[in-house]
Length: 232
Image (cartoon, rainbow, N blue to C red; front, side, top):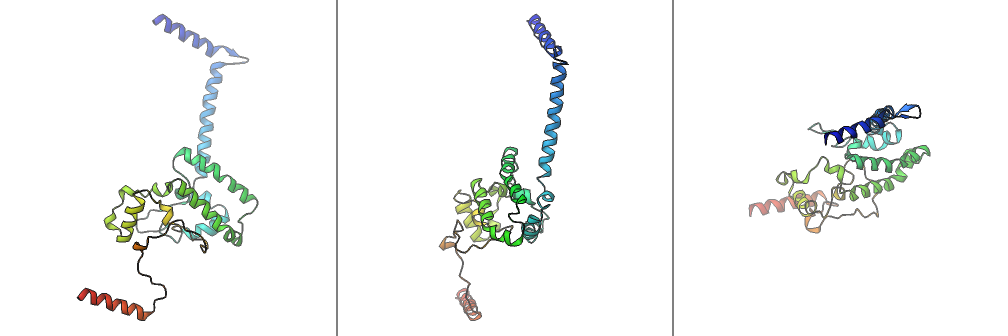
Protein backbone atom coordinates (compact mmCIF):
# COMPACT_ATOMS: atom_id res chain seq x y z
CA UNK A 1 0.00 0.00 0.00
CA UNK A 2 2.79 2.39 0.98
CA UNK A 3 4.64 1.53 -2.20
CA UNK A 4 1.56 2.27 -4.32
CA UNK A 5 1.15 5.68 -2.67
CA UNK A 6 4.83 6.48 -3.28
CA UNK A 7 4.45 5.58 -6.94
CA UNK A 8 1.37 7.79 -7.22
CA UNK A 9 3.17 10.74 -5.62
CA UNK A 10 6.21 10.21 -7.84
CA UNK A 11 3.99 10.16 -10.93
CA UNK A 12 2.26 13.36 -9.84
CA UNK A 13 5.61 15.04 -9.19
CA UNK A 14 6.90 14.10 -12.64
CA UNK A 15 3.77 15.60 -14.19
CA UNK A 16 4.30 18.80 -12.21
CA UNK A 17 7.91 19.24 -13.24
CA UNK A 18 7.59 18.07 -16.83
CA UNK A 19 8.19 21.05 -19.14
CA UNK A 20 5.13 22.28 -21.00
CA UNK A 21 6.77 23.76 -24.03
CA UNK A 22 9.04 26.26 -22.25
CA UNK A 23 7.55 26.39 -18.72
CA UNK A 24 7.02 23.62 -16.17
CA UNK A 25 3.49 22.50 -15.50
CA UNK A 26 3.99 23.20 -11.80
CA UNK A 27 4.93 26.80 -12.57
CA UNK A 28 1.91 27.21 -14.84
CA UNK A 29 -0.40 25.73 -12.20
CA UNK A 30 0.97 28.00 -9.48
CA UNK A 31 0.80 31.00 -11.78
CA UNK A 32 -2.78 30.17 -12.73
CA UNK A 33 -3.74 29.85 -9.05
CA UNK A 34 -2.18 33.20 -8.15
CA UNK A 35 -3.74 34.85 -11.20
CA UNK A 36 -7.13 33.41 -10.29
CA UNK A 37 -6.89 34.75 -6.73
CA UNK A 38 -5.91 38.19 -8.01
CA UNK A 39 -8.75 38.21 -10.54
CA UNK A 40 -11.29 37.10 -7.94
CA UNK A 41 -10.10 39.76 -5.51
CA UNK A 42 -10.23 42.49 -8.16
CA UNK A 43 -13.68 41.36 -9.34
CA UNK A 44 -15.18 41.38 -5.85
CA UNK A 45 -13.56 44.72 -5.03
CA UNK A 46 -15.05 46.28 -8.14
CA UNK A 47 -18.40 44.64 -7.36
CA UNK A 48 -18.48 46.11 -3.86
CA UNK A 49 -17.50 49.55 -5.15
CA UNK A 50 -20.61 49.50 -7.34
CA UNK A 51 -22.62 48.43 -4.31
CA UNK A 52 -22.29 51.67 -2.35
CA UNK A 53 -24.49 54.72 -1.97
CA UNK A 54 -21.63 56.89 -3.23
CA UNK A 55 -21.61 54.99 -6.52
CA UNK A 56 -25.41 55.01 -6.80
CA UNK A 57 -25.57 58.79 -6.40
CA UNK A 58 -22.56 59.50 -8.61
CA UNK A 59 -24.91 60.28 -11.51
CA UNK A 60 -27.21 63.29 -11.27
CA UNK A 61 -30.26 61.28 -12.34
CA UNK A 62 -30.26 59.45 -9.00
CA UNK A 63 -28.70 62.19 -6.85
CA UNK A 64 -31.14 64.93 -7.86
CA UNK A 65 -34.31 62.85 -7.89
CA UNK A 66 -34.85 59.70 -5.83
CA UNK A 67 -31.96 60.29 -3.42
CA UNK A 68 -33.34 63.67 -2.39
CA UNK A 69 -36.66 61.98 -1.63
CA UNK A 70 -34.94 59.31 0.47
CA UNK A 71 -33.31 61.96 2.69
CA UNK A 72 -36.77 63.09 3.82
CA UNK A 73 -37.90 59.66 5.03
CA UNK A 74 -37.53 57.63 8.22
CA UNK A 75 -35.26 55.19 6.39
CA UNK A 76 -32.67 57.98 6.16
CA UNK A 77 -32.99 59.73 9.53
CA UNK A 78 -34.66 58.30 12.63
CA UNK A 79 -34.38 58.13 16.42
CA UNK A 80 -32.33 54.90 16.39
CA UNK A 81 -29.71 56.15 13.92
CA UNK A 82 -30.11 53.18 11.56
CA UNK A 83 -29.95 54.22 7.91
CA UNK A 84 -30.91 52.21 4.86
CA UNK A 85 -28.76 53.11 1.86
CA UNK A 86 -29.54 52.55 -1.82
CA UNK A 87 -28.02 49.03 -2.10
CA UNK A 88 -29.69 47.93 1.13
CA UNK A 89 -33.08 48.18 -0.57
CA UNK A 90 -32.24 47.60 -4.22
CA UNK A 91 -29.47 44.96 -4.18
CA UNK A 92 -29.86 41.46 -2.68
CA UNK A 93 -27.33 40.48 -0.02
CA UNK A 94 -26.72 36.90 -1.18
CA UNK A 95 -23.89 36.68 -3.72
CA UNK A 96 -25.73 34.76 -6.44
CA UNK A 97 -28.82 36.99 -6.19
CA UNK A 98 -26.55 40.04 -6.17
CA UNK A 99 -24.85 38.97 -9.41
CA UNK A 100 -28.22 38.36 -11.06
CA UNK A 101 -29.39 41.82 -9.97
CA UNK A 102 -26.22 43.44 -11.31
CA UNK A 103 -26.77 41.75 -14.66
CA UNK A 104 -30.34 43.06 -14.74
CA UNK A 105 -29.15 46.55 -13.83
CA UNK A 106 -26.56 46.60 -16.61
CA UNK A 107 -29.23 47.92 -18.99
CA UNK A 108 -29.34 51.07 -16.86
CA UNK A 109 -25.94 51.92 -18.36
CA UNK A 110 -27.68 52.00 -21.73
CA UNK A 111 -30.21 54.45 -20.35
CA UNK A 112 -27.42 56.60 -18.95
CA UNK A 113 -25.60 56.72 -22.28
CA UNK A 114 -28.70 57.75 -24.23
CA UNK A 115 -30.07 60.11 -21.57
CA UNK A 116 -33.37 58.32 -20.99
CA UNK A 117 -34.02 60.19 -17.72
CA UNK A 118 -31.30 62.85 -17.77
CA UNK A 119 -33.75 65.68 -17.05
CA UNK A 120 -36.41 66.12 -14.37
CA UNK A 121 -39.21 66.10 -16.93
CA UNK A 122 -37.93 62.86 -18.51
CA UNK A 123 -37.64 61.28 -15.08
CA UNK A 124 -41.22 62.19 -14.18
CA UNK A 125 -42.41 60.92 -17.55
CA UNK A 126 -40.86 57.50 -16.91
CA UNK A 127 -41.45 57.45 -13.16
CA UNK A 128 -44.48 55.15 -13.15
CA UNK A 129 -42.79 52.65 -15.46
CA UNK A 130 -39.63 52.61 -13.32
CA UNK A 131 -41.64 52.19 -10.13
CA UNK A 132 -43.72 49.35 -11.58
CA UNK A 133 -40.57 47.48 -12.61
CA UNK A 134 -39.19 47.74 -9.07
CA UNK A 135 -42.52 46.81 -7.45
CA UNK A 136 -42.75 43.74 -9.69
CA UNK A 137 -39.18 42.71 -8.84
CA UNK A 138 -39.79 43.01 -5.09
CA UNK A 139 -43.14 41.25 -5.38
CA UNK A 140 -41.43 38.36 -7.20
CA UNK A 141 -38.75 37.90 -4.51
CA UNK A 142 -41.21 38.33 -1.61
CA UNK A 143 -39.74 41.72 -0.64
CA UNK A 144 -36.37 40.11 0.04
CA UNK A 145 -34.52 43.39 0.64
CA UNK A 146 -37.18 44.52 3.15
CA UNK A 147 -36.91 41.24 5.02
CA UNK A 148 -33.14 41.55 5.28
CA UNK A 149 -33.86 44.07 8.05
CA UNK A 150 -37.51 43.52 8.98
CA UNK A 151 -38.33 40.03 10.22
CA UNK A 152 -41.98 39.12 10.59
CA UNK A 153 -41.19 36.57 13.29
CA UNK A 154 -39.46 39.28 15.33
CA UNK A 155 -42.39 41.71 15.17
CA UNK A 156 -43.97 42.55 18.51
CA UNK A 157 -47.57 42.88 17.36
CA UNK A 158 -48.63 44.18 20.76
CA UNK A 159 -46.57 47.32 20.16
CA UNK A 160 -48.29 47.98 16.83
CA UNK A 161 -51.57 49.74 16.29
CA UNK A 162 -54.57 47.45 16.29
CA UNK A 163 -55.12 47.83 12.55
CA UNK A 164 -51.43 47.22 11.69
CA UNK A 165 -51.31 44.14 13.93
CA UNK A 166 -54.50 42.81 12.35
CA UNK A 167 -53.23 43.33 8.80
CA UNK A 168 -49.83 41.81 9.52
CA UNK A 169 -51.41 38.78 11.18
CA UNK A 170 -54.02 38.25 8.50
CA UNK A 171 -51.94 38.91 5.40
CA UNK A 172 -48.18 39.07 6.06
CA UNK A 173 -47.79 36.14 8.44
CA UNK A 174 -50.09 33.99 6.35
CA UNK A 175 -48.19 34.77 3.14
CA UNK A 176 -51.19 36.32 1.38
CA UNK A 177 -49.32 39.60 0.91
CA UNK A 178 -45.75 40.83 1.02
CA UNK A 179 -44.20 44.10 2.23
CA UNK A 180 -44.27 45.95 -1.09
CA UNK A 181 -48.01 45.30 -1.52
CA UNK A 182 -48.80 47.82 1.21
CA UNK A 183 -45.63 49.90 1.58
CA UNK A 184 -45.20 51.42 -1.87
CA UNK A 185 -43.79 54.93 -1.54
CA UNK A 186 -42.16 54.19 1.82
CA UNK A 187 -38.77 55.60 0.75
CA UNK A 188 -39.58 57.51 -2.45
CA UNK A 189 -42.49 59.59 -3.63
CA UNK A 190 -45.20 57.75 -5.48
CA UNK A 191 -45.79 58.43 -9.18
CA UNK A 192 -49.20 59.58 -10.37
CA UNK A 193 -51.37 56.62 -9.31
CA UNK A 194 -54.57 57.84 -10.95
CA UNK A 195 -56.17 54.89 -12.70
CA UNK A 196 -53.45 52.52 -11.47
CA UNK A 197 -54.41 49.42 -9.50
CA UNK A 198 -52.29 49.53 -6.33
CA UNK A 199 -52.21 45.73 -6.32
CA UNK A 200 -53.69 45.36 -2.85
CA UNK A 201 -56.63 47.06 -1.20
CA UNK A 202 -57.53 47.54 2.44
CA UNK A 203 -60.38 45.22 3.51
CA UNK A 204 -63.54 47.22 4.19
CA UNK A 205 -63.82 46.00 7.76
CA UNK A 206 -60.31 47.30 8.55
CA UNK A 207 -60.78 50.75 7.07
CA UNK A 208 -60.97 53.62 9.51
CA UNK A 209 -63.59 56.32 9.52
CA UNK A 210 -63.64 58.35 6.34
CA UNK A 211 -62.19 61.79 7.00
CA UNK A 212 -62.18 63.33 3.52
CA UNK A 213 -64.68 66.16 3.16
CA UNK A 214 -65.40 66.49 6.87
CA UNK A 215 -66.08 70.00 8.13
CA UNK A 216 -65.10 71.30 11.59
CA UNK A 217 -68.78 70.94 12.54
CA UNK A 218 -68.69 67.26 11.55
CA UNK A 219 -65.55 66.78 13.66
CA UNK A 220 -67.23 68.47 16.63
CA UNK A 221 -70.36 66.34 16.29
CA UNK A 222 -68.30 63.18 16.13
CA UNK A 223 -66.25 64.21 19.19
CA UNK A 224 -69.44 64.93 21.15
CA UNK A 225 -70.96 61.61 20.11
CA UNK A 226 -67.83 59.76 21.20
CA UNK A 227 -67.87 61.62 24.54
CA UNK A 228 -71.53 60.75 25.13
CA UNK A 229 -70.83 57.12 24.23
CA UNK A 230 -68.08 56.95 26.85
CA UNK A 231 -70.36 58.48 29.53
CA UNK A 232 -73.37 56.31 28.82
